[in-house]
Image 1 (cartoon, rainbow, N blue to C red):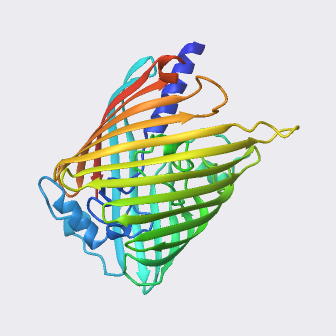
Image 2 (image 1 turned 45 degrees about the horizontal axis):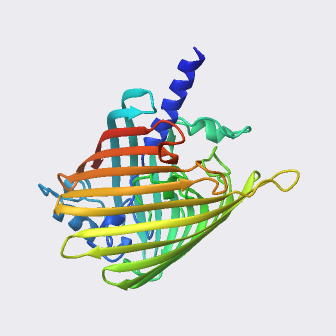
Length: 383
């Protein structure tokens, strides 16, 4: 019985890790536009699309269709924007036990209202049941186990309606850090400071230009719900477009909790081969984790890295091949894990995307335990 319970708990954890939120696709940066704000309202990318973003969604889809909210059947006032994302997936999981699974991933609705240079953004949606990791959860945390607002923030921008300029955000959101890949099982997200449901309350000052961008965020542990991130801190990310097809970036983050302190530093890079329609991007982090304890605690140094090659075989077919490495303590041999990812995106219409996600994962390149794997078919619908 205990083994069955353990297996079910493991499946529940893996399902939670496979759940998702819609983010920007960095695969489109440099290959389709210079900045995330070229297609998204948020300076971080993801969520609601601008008029240009909707045009890109239509142009990169197999069968087109009107890209507007609800196919243009509902036309809100120019001061408002609405949208939503729905995702579900099913397939095969090996842990090394083998399972066939199907589950919902995301059901989010977005609303944005603006007046001159000011705007208010709210995301409302389904929240998978959270397993309590706070010994004293708030009443609000118990009430938000199925419905919550993952993001809600007020924003001011210096150039009204422009994809560039100065942006200031206050509220609940994910700090801009690293490559911002939509695939959250990627190691540089899962172990790199921006895990699934890692949004928290903060203040961000961000500047976006076609040639460069910078984002600085101060954040605190969410005081209202039992959060994923249990730390206060600050994050900074800067990116410089060396040419129209190449960019380099640098990142730093400090996280302070009751259990430990983490100091992250890293670099990113992107290069787009125009003739081949092939994008390379990568991120490498060094993490100094200082665990609190009666005698000062331990201080493991970690490495987190990910590299991805993305090839557009047609306007609607995108293939990603990714390689990840995570070493949670470089001083201990055979403690690392590595993965090979394969994602095939088919943008069928401007609102619907079918994705085949596959991964093989190894502990110490096979010397640390059995290999894990999954193959899932994912359906993504944008309102």
